[in-house]
Amino acid sequence: MDQVSLRAEPRTDFGTRPSRRARLAGTVPGVVYGRGLDPVAVSVPRRELHAALHTDAGTNALINLEVAGSQNFLTVAREIQRHPVRGDIVHLDFINISLDEKIHAEVGLEFIGVPVGVRVDAGILETIRGSVEVLAFPMDIPSHIPLDVSAMEVGDNLKVSDLAPIDGVEFVDDPDTDLVSVIIPRVVEAAAVEAAVGEAEEGAGAAEAAVDGGAGSAESPDEN
Picture 1 (cartoon, rainbow, N blue to C red):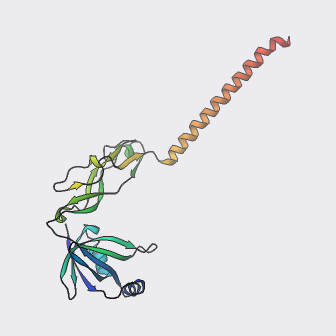
Picture 2: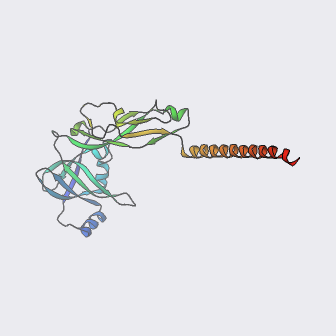
Picture 3: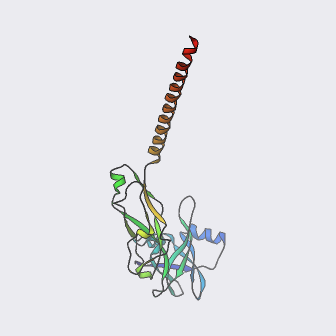
């Protein structure tokens, strides 16, 4: 697991306006939390924070938070709040951790291979869950979790229980949780349904014609 260093300044002003001023100055407000630790309000440089959260470990990077005039904290970023339009981080929590204690983390899946149902049957790979929750010591948290999808056919799905075991990592999600499936594209499905309906209507029309024709034949002797 990657470790990165991040400078931080303590904050003494709180509320919406001070936070807005901090963001305009190119910093992001945050709070350091931890067991037996009084919350510490900080602000961190936006660009450095962006770099810290864009290593291979992503948001699970171990951040050595260097707070000016205070102690350093080994942390992970959690409760990341983003601007609804721009996507910029506007606030986050730093959770103080110990390398000797397991923590929960959300880890992204990496799909390996191209499904048979995609290559042969023109299906599509539908992602139901792009990540799973794990429990592990901080240094054992993987940057991603591989999942081989190459043998999947149309109608197949893979679950948490299909993930290959990883030493030191426990999957927290229900083993029956669906992760990915191979389906026929909805446009194709709709066309197939329309075709089936059309065939059914044609069949019904032919049957009605046959019935009408039969009825006419049955009445013709009476006309004589």
